[in-house]
Length: 338
Image (spheres, rainbow, N blue to C red):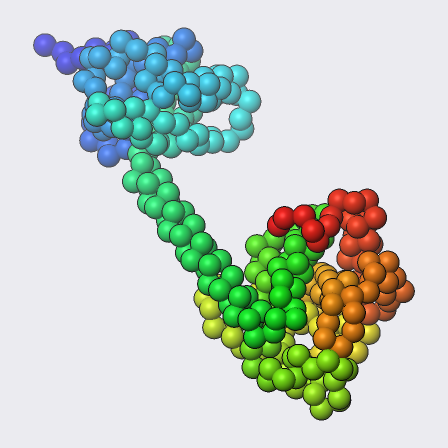
């Protein structure tokens, strides 16, 4: 007496052969065959196990009836492309289904069109990638937790620096706010790096003596040389944090200027990271419009005039243009919540 598998294969062509059938039956990957009406003509034991259904039950269904309801359109579109031969090369599609225990599972479906006794069919495979997807989700959750921990640590460091230098309280946050706004307007994608670098750009001031930071007068050349070390100190603090190497480099360069008059390395033009050029402009604008121990706050017009007249000289021209546009169009304000 013939098995149901042998009967099904007689329907779609005896040329499949016992050898192919034997391989399909023992394959760890799911194997299926369906016709142009999406009727399932064959599935192997591995696919039955994935679905949690006996073969006799599955073969009563269409291919689009065994997948998750929200992915029906995917399997139907895949079938349409196969039979219309829109795709020159075989492409995989990630499609989900519900197993017998009600669990959502993920699989990679692929298939090719062939003919048996004048009938066009799709012969395909399914690889269960549920465990991989669950592992990826776990990694994403862990990454989010790490990022939250890192962000909390960064804000704690910012608080420490501002406690040491109360005259610039809020400075790093406001610089971050403007830097992020400029970066987004410019279409940059590494916003998180710019956020972290701008929040930490003055972390190196933790090594500068308190009495220098709060002096109610302009610094002497020697005092200024001491303050200038904060870029290097900040770099050395941040570079040891895994994954923050680029952020550390941005911090190191945020006082560099296009004409080479900045510090600590006297870099010029394209030698300076674009992110550092953004923070450099934001730092100047924020510092000018807020009170400092040695001078009262200047007007926003004064700050914008400073970066405008030095556009392309000390400051990046594109960054300056975007910064000025944000303020003049009233699309940015330091007073609005971050």
